[in-house]
Image (cartoon, rainbow, N blue to C red; front, side, top):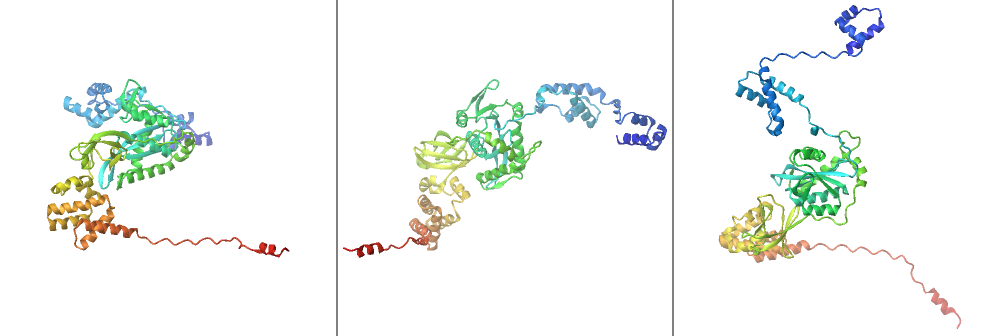
Length: 506
């Protein structure tokens, strides 16, 4: 293009210059000079004639047949270019290079007609009308242990504002709680939400778009007044909610790389929430305003939140086994040993498990992961009084040491008691001290143990007395100074009016 422009410029400046002279000056063929003088746009290059491929030509029909047959099978089991080359060499003894086969396979696949179903249609989303929900899997170091977490994601289709929260699993309580927190984060509810066919929402996929929905999901939808739309199963459905599919991966790459190290799930969710707020300043490709500015326009169009908050909890009954545990969602949680073989009520929340005997709460545990045992040492103390030999190797003791509730001070007392009283009596002494935790705060019991050891006493009664004394001492605080009263600025009373009465004649 630049060469043609120069030739034409010289010809306009020197009309008498010949084609031969221009050809000599610019070192091009005369036909190129004539083409430049005829049109400022160079003619398209002539297609190169197909080069003969003597080694590949005999196998082209075979390759075409394999690639044509691939159209009717799963994409995961279709031929790659390398696999085509391997089969030609192994099955047919073809003497052909892999790069040659790769170029031909690409050429054949490019010639295939793109099915209409694979063509995407650009979409415009009205403010406040639609949102999308999905789960993503991520990893995090929680209390030093690498674990997988399920990240709930809701994304408003119009503004692109998202909300994410991590849970230990994709259980229904987590699914419901994610909605509640997302609506509160947005300050409102969209008209319609798109979903996969998640088990938390759908119990059965029927023909077409019909679904048998879970009762708790229907209750959530009724409470907040939104509509649900379920995508087709499989990869087709993923394209029907591409916004949240992309948001899951984008958020993970942006805020969870490198793998976060946190002390608890609560800290992890604080980190994720901070990421959601930071994303308000980003600009989605093709838009002229930030996500936060776009959401400011969308927020007034969302439906208002109901007065009462939806309680994302599931109720169930469980039988306590002979190890004083109940099994909830493939996780064992301990209860007081007196409830063995009894049936208890369990409230399954997104982050906790609450266990009730009638109206009384007997245990509350953080949610565990599938296959774990969440045991509390206090629930086994009465049993261990009768079986002190089982104390040292008990799973509940190991859990208490890991959690820090069984401190080095307890260990010192136990070691001293066993040395002086023997293993069984020494362990029973320790258990009596551990029972004090039910009536005295833990820090006071630890202080009582330290004071008792200072005077070389192992008596649980001494520990209790010293613990309560420490509690009383810590409660003794200086009295707050008395604040001075405001000065009364009213005028002093006067008796002049009475004097005037005395001066009147009788």
